Length: 307
Image 1 (cartoon, rainbow, N blue to C red):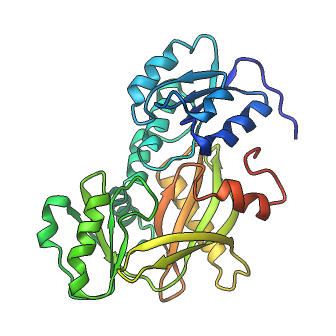
Image 2 (cartoon, rainbow, N blue to C red):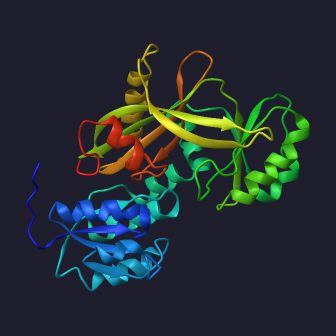
């Protein structure tokens, strides 16, 4: 597929580290001008970008000020982001300011912060685990009379960090401390434990419509201390329990509820005792965990990054 763009069409890439190199190179090969943003002047992706901006991807105001100097020279047509958490909010703010199709700031905040996501699920009837939210200064009040449960940060910087399965009361305090050590929004979540597997729907949203690619089995390990770590992914097949259709239907409801116009869109689920999917997380980024480097090239008969 050959894409021809005018010299004025420019893409904004949040971060320019090693994991962004492929993204920048691919965008350049498709004819786009790339403006890369990273606080580290030595970021390896800068050597492939047309323009580099040395700012933190967390600082939307500073980035927007820098982009303002370029707005008459280039036509901003998209924002690329591979990082979860605060850069998702930055991307939303850039899109709103420069009127680039994306997702609203409020919706991005509600989807990125798991405490707000849980509250939104309850409000709009999106299936998710039963939960309770605590602020970090309420650690002494956390209580459960039923185990196992899951204790997790409401927002962390690294996937799976701070998440524990708690199977007895004597493990509760250490798991709370682990979650608190990894939360960046001063909230933790205590939720019901679901016995089933973890699944992720890989997709995009374009013009408010779901563009589904595949369902992944997420391979997670519970350590002896209860901490959960990610070990990898595999393509989900065969689908004996109709999980693909469930994932598709829930994803469409999320898109409608949060008015998502355009975004990378990876939705994570866990299966309950009745083989029904419950929403765990929504990722509005292109994803890490070596998915782009290792899994997608082996799994797909097309170029994921070109798509």
